Image 1 (tube, one colour):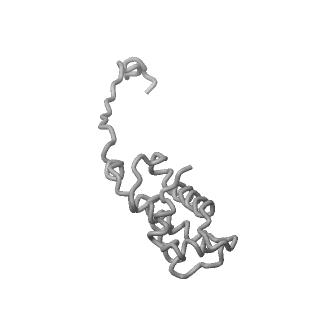
Image 2 (image 1 turned 180 degrees about the vertical axis):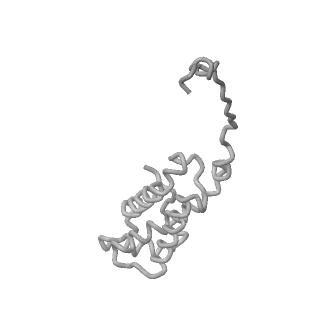
Image 3 (image 1 turned 45 degrees about the vertical axis):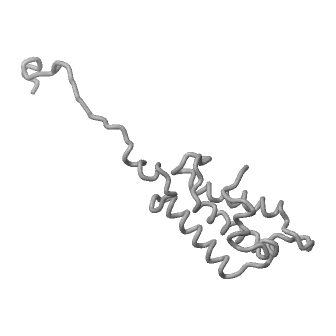
Length: 145
């Protein structure tokens, strides 16, 4: 499975030292690439759980905002596992989840063309009613009415 962000996105947003600290579980002094990739894939799956009701997945166009949100979630999860969680990382994670919740409730969007056209592209329909000849009339029912 691919993810909405890659290691370079994570390093650009948090810095190489922060990614190293959060991912180096074996103490080698190197970024643990499998840990980073797993965190990004897990973050993508979490994001998709919010998007699945509103968007056809996988997205054909990935908005930049999803890379940021993916990084915020991945860094939060890696840092929590490594014991390097900070208040800033927690706040960024909580903000990401709030935004995803707003997207899932149609309060916010991804900025894709489909966001604007969800309610506007409904087919125009009309209703027409037709009936046959009346079966029961006063004359046919005689004195029953």
